[in-house]
Image 1: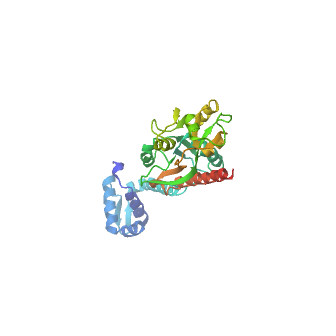
Image 2: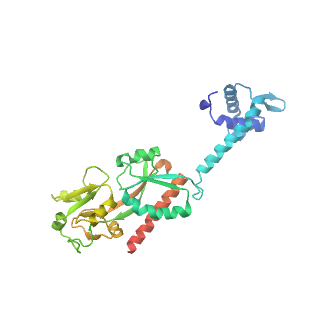
Image 3: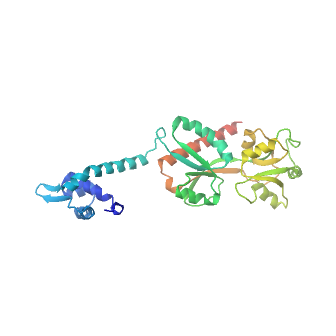
Length: 305
């Protein structure tokens, strides 16, 4: 018997026939017609190579084969019902689940510390795996379930992907405290005289500042291109290099920040992405709520400073 070709709905019909001993009443319980019940019974008989039920004056009497398998069938159906029910409910205190999130080390530094403070209280067995997926593969990774969320700039326009804004932060020029140009205002010439660090997850390509400078027919000197913000701040503390980064990053890492002498550099937006297929999933929805709420709290604290 090849169970991979058996329709599981047949076992629901089997249980109903066994319980009611009547094809018509079994159909009423399952919600199908009496001919459909007869058809299901025929398919079950073919599968098990056994009559399973014999028609008598007392109704449909189960054969020894039917009596032997009814316990296992009912246990299996109950297990399925429990699994379906649990999939509709997410209890964070009891959940043993891993959430996979694509994010940069900058977002990790902002979100993960307060997230784990919350998880310790509300979901102690929940685990987080953080890594940076390639931006062009984000939709595919979300659709395949290889990641649950992505935290990134608002560049993904795929209709399958839902998103919500978490943060918005303006760019500033940062340098170590005590830097020769660490003053209240920076001219464009002074900005261009600096040696810069550029952070990007891509191997090549221009940043927002470089695009704005390019429109002016000028460019800055980039001596270090890296994908790690936290490493860059350590380099800056030991050199006279500068980095254009968000104002909140400068504040958290005790860097001197000065307004950019370059116009038309938009504020950085950070969005949370998830696939539409998980939009109503209780676990996904719960984690979304945590990330959104934490982001709002972080933004409120930053604005209060």
